[in-house]
Image 1 (tube, rainbow, N blue to C red):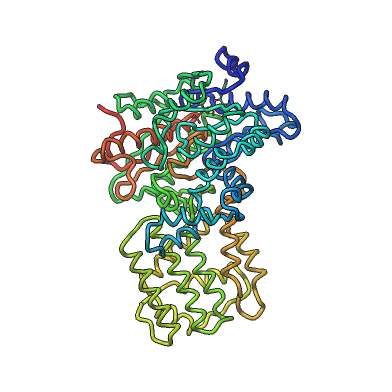
Image 2 (cartoon, rainbow, N blue to C red):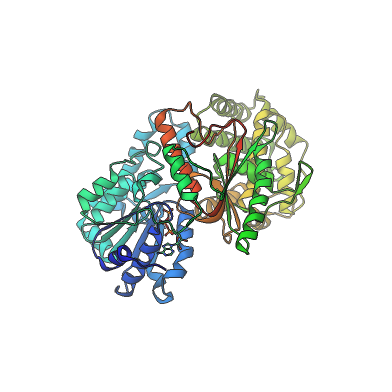
Length: 567
Ligand SMILES: Nc1ncnc2c1ncn2[C@@H]1O[C@H](COP(=O)(O)OP(=O)(O)OP(=O)(O)O)[C@@H](O)[C@H]1O
């Protein structure tokens, strides 16, 4: 490890530090070295806190801890997401604000309530907070208020965390910044930042391009610049090309970057399948070992499609492409909601007709509530309304008018013969989802659940729910609790050689090779007709994605996609 004068300065300086540097300049690494040094001198009850944004980033940092931090003090480094830290904090101390114990409304429950709420949801969120019930987005604000108002809490936490490292500082929102500022009274704060990796501004509320200046004004930190050092992809032109994309400047495409353009008629996910194999072979030859590869798509759903496509063998242009074992980093909200619908069908044989079908219709309405919370669409709104009317009709003894409800009644009457084997029964129940466009949509989303790697835990949970008499009473609750756990903690899988995620989620990570997949219709990588501000933001995102690679990048883009660099 090179420890130059700048890095020596960082290790020798106490107090607040602002460390700036481009992608791969070594911000995370030097921060871990600094933590290692501070950890040696801590009291037994003290810890160093390393805050980052995503669970995936936390995992990558945690993986690197073994490299830099001695076993004896490792337990005293807490690498956590902002949200997890604030959630624990509000649970422990929220009652100081309201006089009541704090409760947390999980995101899917919030989406459901929001869809049913007539008034302004942002006002309702504040009312709930006054009652001690917090939604995801309120946690940081609540924690910040508590830290600002209570000297005792500030001191308690600063005593516990004399050093707090804030990763990706440029992307902190106003509430995260308020909490950090309050703790900075007594804790030393190290901010790691790259202004050009600001990818949430104008996109997430409260993120501000003045944040770095505010840190300088308020904390008066000692500033260090790792400048354009690049330890990740030294000498292969990847960073220079990424910078050219950021600034839309003319640039030669270096050897380390391949472009694959596909003609209309080809599906991007199929071409991506080929590209992953190609990159894998090239990197294996170059490095002499099995490489790590990230496949980055332009949206979560697109990434899920790629995942499905590469999960089976495929013949493309006369060549057989074997299926690719991979991990998917993805927000599976809708797939989980579709899973709850399937689970409700597993309960049918134990229930009378009205009760059984009504429970399934409730799960279907919830699916569309979650869908509208992500993206308001007329058809999803209508689906909720017709399903709710069908439930009313059923419970008052009338015949429902909706196609979906009729199809479910017919499916119930045809009787479902479950076997006690959760895997087969899950497929049997899922196959009942046909007879209306809504059911077809839910069927499609339920198939994606397989990608969650949750199948094993679901099978075990359902095995316990089997009553030996043809049904799984309580299946809906079992599936709900298993998937909720899966959504919060993520699948417990080992890091995989091939990982799929959207561009934003790649931030803070590092792989031998990166495949960036673009599509023409739903989620373009870049569109010159977008407003200038959106183009600038997207160029930052693309730069982050490119610079995740140590050795090679491969673009898979439609033939007439907009060029990424000028000229
Ligand atoms: N001083 C150093 N000498 C040699 N290698 C280093 C040094 N610092 C970092 N590296 C290596 O360079 C790579 C990038 O480092 P690191 O992840 O710390 O950069 P970063 O600035 O946090 O990147 P980003 O902002 O893109 O996430 C890592 O593989 C790391 O092991």
